[in-house]
Structure formats: C-alpha cells, structure tokens
Image (cartoon, rainbow, N blue to C red; front, side):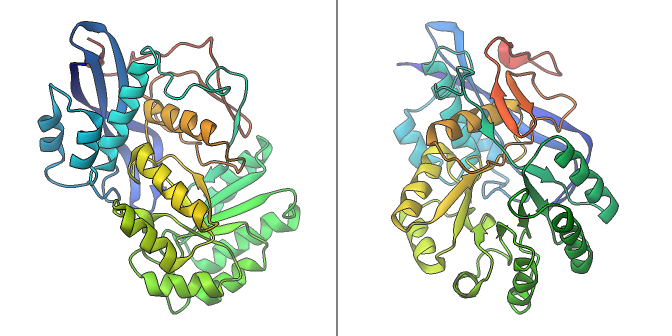
Length: 355
C-alpha cells in the first residue's frame, strides 16, 4: 500500500495561563499528521505529534528534520517504529493516523463500546498548580461537578500550605468519598522525601507521582521499598524506549504504579510494552494525556477504553484551549463520553491539513 504523509504545525492557545512542572504555559505547539493512499486522497487518517517542550525526550533541534525525512512517502510502520523509537510523539501521531485510516478515516482509532457511545471512561479531576486560593477554588469546582478522584500538582508552593489544602479536603471528605492523588513532579529531595511521604500518608492519599527527580534509580528504589504511600513513576519512564531498559528500570525500582502517556512513552506500542512488563511484576498502571489537542486525546481515550483498566484515567485536558478541534468527546461530571452523533470540526486557524 503506497502511503503518503504530511505534517502540519499547529499552535494551541490556552484559555488561561496554566501552571505546569515546566512553568506557566500560554501556548502549546503540536503537529497534525495526515496519512492517505495516493490512489484515494479524499480518504485520510489524522494523528497528532504532540511534542511537549522541556519534557519530551524528542524535544531536539532535529525534530522537524525527522518529520521532513518521513514525508511524502511513509515507510512501513515496522521499519518506521525502529527508526523513530526515540521520537515517541512522532510515533504516537503516525500510529494514530494509520489506525484512523484503517478504520475509515472517521477518527475512530480503536473501535469499542466507548467509541460507539455505549460506555464512558471515569477520569480524575486535575487541579493545576497555582496559589493556595487558586487551587482551593479549583477543588471546589471539581467536587461540585461530581468528581470523586482529584489529582493535585504539588511542589509549586510551600509544602505546609499544600498540606493544609489536603487536610481541608480530608476534613470534609474521607478517603471513601474522595480519592486524592498528588503529583510532585520530582520536587522533593532524596533526603527529605521519606519524611514528606510520611506526612502525606496520614491524609490517606491514593498515591504520589514522581516524588524525586527522574534518573535516581537507587534512591527511588529505596523510597518505593520504604514508602508508607504508594509511588507512581511518571517522568522516570521518559526516554526509556528500549525493552531491555524498561525491564531493568521496573526490576530495579519496583514501584507500586506506573503512569503512561503514549505521546511521551513510545506511542501505543511502547505503552503496551510497559503494561506487559508491569503486569509480569504485578505493578498497576493508569494513563494520562499530556496536553494534546482533541485529536491526540481522542486516540488516548479510545486506547484506554480497550485496555479495560477500571481506575480513573487522567484524560481531563480537552477543555484547555480556545482553538481546540471540536470533537465527539464530552465530559459529564467525571465521566468521559464519545457522542457518536456529534461531528468533528476543524474550523480553527490553519486547516490546510484537510486539503
């Protein structure tokens, strides 16, 4: 099958500046991937190369050169996957576009009861970094909207103030009513991490993501062995794209959870490698999006649906942008639905990828 591919830059604009572990973001660059057969140019699949500056392992000066080298004639996926295994966001985008094309170019990436509108995916409510009052306001809104699992980014303000926030939630809602996850994004030092985990554990949290910076395998292994609070690896997985390395990391650190972001962790094929290895070692997992547009978020949600993981997933980023693509994804409280009667719209900004 003679496949053609093109890559189109697109700048996503945040509705309001959003605090992340990589600072305050107002825009997010991405690339839309279009794949089609030369004999049928009107039928095409779309994907998203969701590069995350400052976080992705493929945030490299030659990123656009790699995109250019893949077009206009797309190599076979098995050949391509090896060539760009260190460019997970590109692999993620191409995988998505190819699956979309295979399924008729209707943005159905992984057919399931979810993509048929018959089932929903439970997600966590994400509380963005900010001042104490800003985070308190976000928490009230999420709880009012019916979220029973909240994820708080911590490490941006004073630790005592963050503890106060969590204590305030626990005074009103016990662990059976509201599940609390926290994400430290590597903010703790190896020296004080265990002490802080002890304090957090008293609040009956579900887990903490990446308490110390990635790359300190022995220190992280010690924490995972001694922790009173389950630890989930996140940034630790970024850049580990070889199967042998993945196995070594999990065997060395032995975390309680891993968190999978397909656009950062090797696309869907790479994420499924992580799942297989984690299952062997009885390590649980959940998935999250990483600031993708609705094209990427749709693919991740449909992939999550076929994994049949009942834990709340981190897929609540579809409403962040002023110029996101309108999609059938619909959030009702903590449940993400795919509305089969709602059409995709690509009216924002440059839509040359549709031509």
